[in-house]
Picture 1 (cartoon, one colour):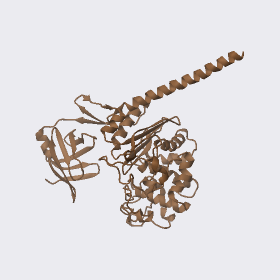
Picture 2 (cartoon, rainbow, N blue to C red):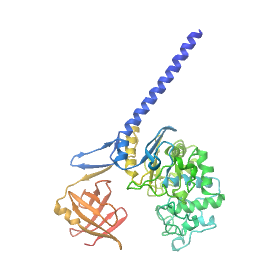
Picture 3 (cartoon, rainbow, N blue to C red):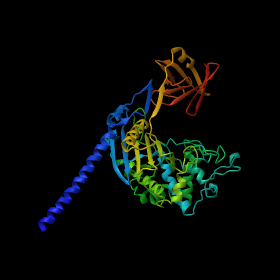
Picture 4 (cartoon, rainbow, N blue to C red):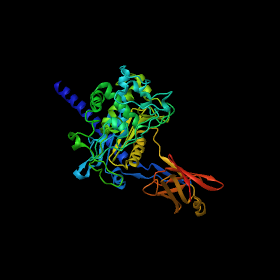
Length: 479
């Protein structure tokens, strides 16, 4: 009888090992398909055909002159896999691992917003009160835009407070680090944070607003911002290897990635310091970011209170305009945030109706291209909606037609760019751009970057080109 029991136990153990080995094999095959299935984000249609390029991740890193990439995927509440590629620091010959710390840039914002929303739940803050009722050492200066409407916490978090200062460049190793009060008054390396349109009028991204929120939290809790975040958000979520502390403590230097500029050179001092911690100061890993994502996603999907209450998460993930929630962006199928600090680019995406979240971090200013390509590969493998390539259609123009766009375009008093004919398209150079951009025609009024797909829109009057627009810049044709 004992022999039969022993044999039965062996069969059970063998079966478990077999299932585990099969699962591991399946996961390895999945990761292999993702690594070798990076897809070009820009797809150009020539006639009836669309060319799609596929890449291997290691080869693509070298091709794009990117130093390191870190990826983590959470599936059903568990980090299914996390992996590093390339170099964390070439000067120290350190490779990227799943535990390498990266600067998260603006992904700092939704996680910082979590603490502000906790204080709202505790009754210490009100989303719709004037922030000047809380602020003590510094106040939002009143002006003609604040006569009727005020700057509130809700408007700080969803970027509708009408405030200046989009983002922050950080401070190099030799720079003097200003206080938050000095930053808010423009005594650092950015303009003063001021109201420039009526609060609540519309969404307009402002890192300056999150810096005001940072000051609010420190005044209420009478602690350093990084200690508040460590004690109340990061550690409770299990993000114990992450920190908002700037400058980065020496204890972390051995596991921190160095940042790299678009030309491949290392950021002086390896990284910048961001005293604007709520807006841009978080150091973390993709796996750690997914611990925050897990909590918000689970509460949203189950409608059961978690780290934040259900009502709070629902408000956080409300689209207040321009796909902006209270912290994360919010679109049809997912929510999340992107981030960029000097030498670093990151993206966090969390699906609303699938138990999947993905974080990708790159220690290069040129990281956006590979991030998009990796997301396309992951979305294909996991059958996820909301991740689509950029499709452009090429419509040939004759040399005579192309000559209509040639000339100089003035974007401001001191910024003028030039367009010339090149090959079967146009070349946009100088002024707005450091490196020239090759443009292909989609229509008479629309051309696109052959590299990124970015649109350049032209205006006509009596068959002559009068101006052009690219992103938020408008240029008048002057020659």
